[in-house]
Amino acid sequence: MRTQTSSESSVHSQQSSTPLLKDAAAEDQDTFLQVIGVVGVVVVVIPWIAIPVIPLGIIFFFLRRYFLETSRDVKRLECSTRSPVFSHLASSLQGLWTIRAYKAEQRFQELFDSHQDLHSALNVGQGGLILSYALNIIVVFPWCIRLSIEVENMMISVERVIEYIELEQEAPWELEFRPPPDWPNNGMIALSKVNFKYSSDGPLVLKDLTTDIKPGEKVGIVGRTGAGKSSFIAALFRLSEPEGRIWIDKILITEIGLHDLRKKMSIIPQDPIVFTGTMRENLDPFNKHTDEELWNVLEEVQLKEVIEELPDKMDTELVEFGSNLSVGQKQLVCLARAILRKNQILIIDEATAHVDPSTDELIQKKIREKFAQCTVLTIAHRLSTIIDSDRIMVFDSGRLEEYDEPYVLLQNRDSLFYKMVQQLGKAKAAALTETAKQMKSSTFHFSQGGKLLSIIELAEELAASEFNSWCNSEGNIQMMLSDHVVMNASNGQILILTVFEIAL
Ligand SMILES: Nc1ncnc2c1ncn2[C@@H]1O[C@H](COP(=O)(O)OP(=O)(O)OP(=O)(O)O)[C@@H](O)[C@H]1O
Ligand SMILES: [Mg+2]
Image (cartoon, rainbow, N blue to C red; front, top):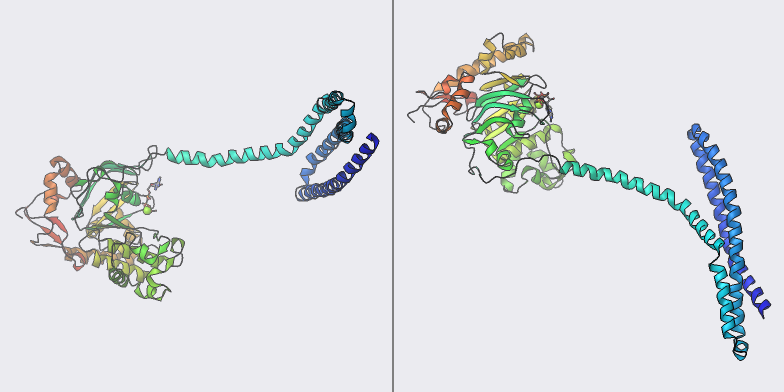
């Protein structure tokens, strides 16, 4: 009975082990060839890798041999102790009646337990267990190392996020004190002892800037690259907090929230900013204007025809950063956006640097037309763009070196502006000087208009010493309260006040 059972079980175990052996052998061949292939390719690409590969291969070969001998013995032991358990169980089940007839249950049970103990409590069994786990570790360990390295690498992103979280934050967007909705209705800008740097440990890029820009004045800003022109604008927008004091109309800009400040000044930047989205969203991101207004403004900047030819007209999607528009067209979109915003202060930072002269002319014409009453600050390298400004600021190394009417600056042969104009060549310099002269003769005349009374109110409201200091430092004696109003009719436009009649 016992012999029959053990032969049956061995046949059975043979049947079940055959396909396993076949699979294992095939997989072994497969992986072995893969390893050879990978090592071969790597060595062909970088032959130096052969140097560590050869000793490693030898070490692995010996390790495998040692492991194979041990694991084979362990497997043998395991099999030889497992078979008695199964054969005892099978023969007990078959001879159950006989066992009961002889009342030998207890004895058979003890025998079964002892077989089982021998199989499971063997020290070699424990050794086998450890070895089979150790084998597992060989597979799992590299994976574990790789994952831990990946986690560590991904933690770099977390580290960056934490770094950003800990960055010093901008001032609040809105403060308790809100400027009136129509602020700034004059567009006067005054700066007193302003120093500006981009970071707390960075160098000062604007130094001791004290000046004023009158309501509705058109100011050209020039200077060499890195002189601080864009930084002046950055200080107005509080991209970093400036030291000193800056007023726009009657309000100190540091006393209001950033949103309240920034949305009241329009800027046409050097690199025109177009968002991903439809043309309509680009022109009117807050959905405040009617279709008619949008088409009108597009007509004004001569983009109407271009937009009408687009497949979905105003609803055409502009791809990322508006790459389906030319730089000049993007500039015009920015201009249209600025016209729609109707802010009293417009800032143009090299807006026409990338456009052709006729587009430049169009932009300048539109700006003069649409922003006639507004304060316009224009940064430009092309002097012809700003020669017809009311006044010109010349920056050098973060200092405001000169600030006067273009013709006055051109009269002074030591002035930086004179030198900049002369560098353009005789013909161009003569043309620019002529334009400046014509501007000068047509600019000032006395009038009794009443538009800009509020500058006087402002003067009264500011601390007197402060007001005098920024008036005097630029030599703008006419800014002191005097008897007459001087109005600027530059470009045939209206009202740019320098002095206002006190009686008004
Ligand atoms: N974001 C910034 N962070 C730190 N320093 C800056 C930053 N932007 C400008 N600067 C520095 O401020 C100084 C003035 O630069 P600014 O951009 O104001 O010059 P710019 O007169 O506008 O020159 P450009 O004519 O080339 O536009 C430069 O020395 C520049 O290195
Ligand atoms: Mg700049």
